[in-house]
Image (cartoon, rainbow, N blue to C red; front, side):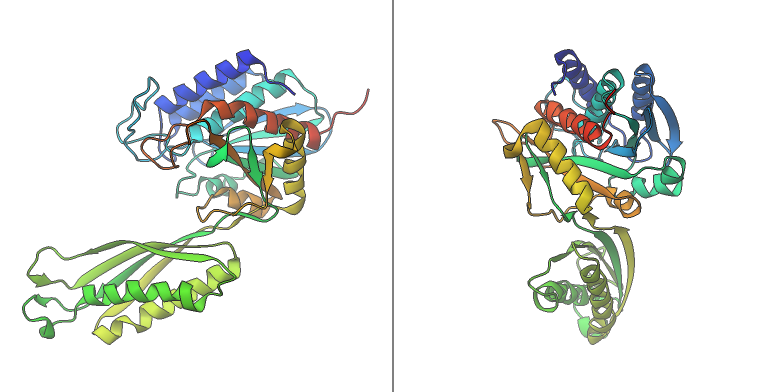
Length: 387
């Protein structure tokens, strides 16, 4: 299939407009309004407010299966460093993860499919808020996404620096890791820094804990399995000559296997309870289960693989790639309904900046590839009956 050049130009303009007006999770009011206006102009039935600022557009064309295609719409609290006309106009907020591109690609596919109905069935275009940490996918599900819009399968994509424009990557199995967070409170006894023997130092206990936490991965998780525990914050004390009462450690835990995920939580809990008392310090932990592993269903994987091969060519479809330790709340959706998630290449002649970087900007050359894959998927999964 080919994508109309006029449509591609239009989608690129949409992308730049969305990029210039980024909004954080559950505050995507202008973005949602923009999406609603576009979908309605395509003649697509629109449902607003699911999960707060979520939008679902429904396009029906006769009898047949029903699938969902999802794009995330939120931005990040980062001050943009790009010098472009479509630079963010909102202070300390930018589309540093390419959700402006995801949204525009899905809108472009929706417009194309509304004009060229070479399918038989129903498509739900899902525009999800708050993917970044806040779990907008779960909010939409809790608000009745799959009850109000039953579907046979659900699909999502993410742009991927390091993968060339015109290519995709998809696995039969894990694509992205689980994501949990923890906050450890170490309570000791404050004292003068010159007299540490009179107190119980939570900073010393924290330093030992950080070092020993690394042994969970290196010595207690099989080298044939994958896991990451990262301590990302350590906060304590107010001045240089006082050992404080309390130190706070925060971080994340990630894995591709739910059993490994559970065992890492248990080992971390054990270590927090047993190691700090050796320093006369009490350790307590709040552990928060966040996102599950993003794992592709085998049948849904084949649907993406075959549709992308048909649209792009076999040499442009990468399989069995290394999954990423980053995480995605699309995993909540694919836990409920069979689904698959793929990466969309964005590296041109100049490699893309990394995701979550202040100089990142979605490569508009990837828009055509994204639209082609979505349209090919719809026409493959919802084949039109011969007349």
